[in-house]
Image (tube, rainbow, N blue to C red; front, top):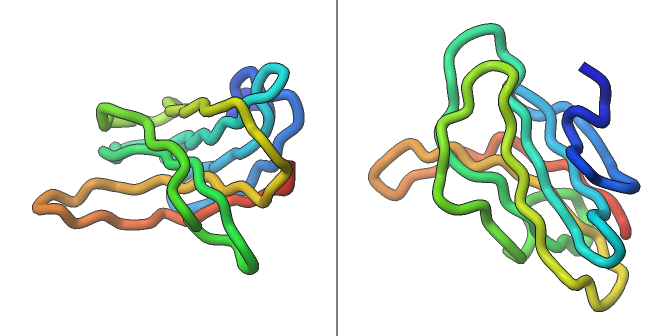
Length: 116
């Protein structure tokens, strides 16, 4: 897959490897932001949601801006993207996949961050 496959319809973006796949954060359209996650293992699946956040300092989930809803199961080769906007000011943004483990418990698969 090409990097753009992990970052659907994003203009400029930051892509990186996280647990079991790739996360991407970047611009979408003229003034929106997007976060995406792609599950790339050869087998299995993950159930949860991708989150767009704002970070200050080190890269991590940061402050929640938008979640993809409802949660979905991703099988190998599939991804999920959330779009939010309009963006009012430049900031450090993050993309994080949260696997829903049930019972209100989530696993952070890692974050990718970029300034836009």
